[in-house]
Amino acid sequence: MSWQPTLTWEYAQKRAQVLQKMRQFFNERNVVEVETPALSQGTITDVHLEAITCRYNFLGDSSTEHGTNLYLQTSPEFHMKRLLASGYGCIFQIAKAFRHEEAGRFHNPEFTLLEWYRLGFDHFTLMEEVGELLKVVLSCKEPTQTTYQNLFLAHLRLDPLIATREQLLTVIKQHDKLSEWLTVEQDNDILLQFIFSELIEPHIGNESPCFVYNFPCSQASLAKICCEDSRVAQRFECYYQGVELVNGFNELTDVDIQLKRFQEDNNKRENLFIQTKSVEVNFIAALSQGLPQCSGVALGVDRLIMLALQADHIEQVISFPVARC
Image (cartoon, rainbow, N blue to C red):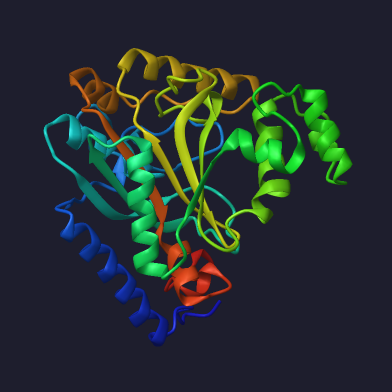
């Protein structure tokens, strides 16, 4: 194991310049920088995300023999929404986030997220602002926007909102991507996500950033349902030059609907024999108090810097990846 950083001094200076541009961008728009804990007593229920846990023995209701599970945040979302519910205005944060996933070209288990929330914005207004930030940092062309459904229709002649499991498997087989685990997969969302990543992503966002919006409701548990089509939610992502950069929502503010969606996540976990997660009670209490209408977005800072510096691997833009930490 090498003790040396994978981030060169030259790239460290360029990384600092990108962070400075980001902070200046929000300062010019009167969006206030905040800082929230990396640790939380609750975590996400999302079937596709797992938090890193630790034990803490000194909370009021824990004992030195048993302790309490604390979770490293997968994003600062719940804490930031608690700030909004308490009366904060538009806010942003550049924070460390942690996910129990395999390291790779675009992912390190500990990474940096830029997350921000805009009161009174819908997801379309926020997409425009994200696009402005990308142009500032990357000097890229004007971003494009399209719906999730339109991409499937344009590239595969398949409507993802009505497609059956058999139709999804047929498309995968036609493109010579079918493997054994897919043939036994019963969750259409997993098949859709596979198709999107393998058959659609390589063809979008190559010349300019591509915003994709109106994802299926089942893939957007924290977003409002679209008024025009109840099958989709007001969620968006952005892709550029083979990199998934952004995940944003017109935020769900109804506490009863949110609780129902968390329970649906846990039901999926049970069906997949994955450990269920307790609902994050402080976040639910904040929603019960009242979250103002807002839209929020998370942007992968390390990935953005990879694009800005034309780096090939995330290890080139972070000081010590997991294998050297």
